[in-house]
Image (tube, rainbow, N blue to C red; front, side, top):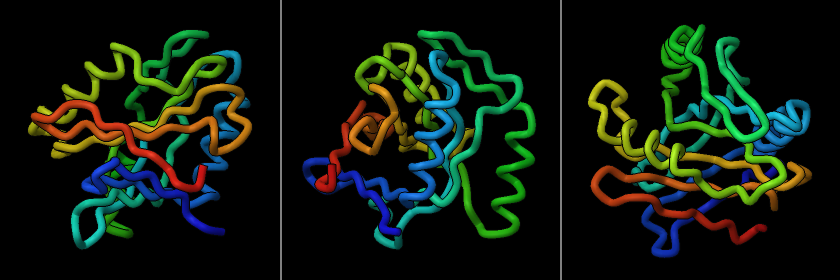
Length: 163
């Protein structure tokens, strides 16, 4: 199966996710409906450091909280999962994914605040966090949008030529 790629208009930032991982995110979103859900994206950057390559997408940690219009990702077992990925494959935290089912997959003010906090938090070591949002009915990849929040630049939407 092919990967789905999202790129900024200037091609300075990209996100690549395997179709099977994206399908899993869509399925998790549909299963959780009508409540929102989400998780973490892990992987690596290309040698050119311009594209985040997702190799893993987690389920919602068990201490996550959600409702029809909100999702707060928990942290239980998350660090252990990330440590295992690092030791096994040198994969690391790239950002988050979550659903906005029934709505446009656009970042909320809360999403923007969280992205800014992650980008500016030295402990996270993620100055360009990515966000994958699932909206609509989570029926297919057309219900997905991707974003990156580079430190000191603000939100940039990434577009897919395939959608």
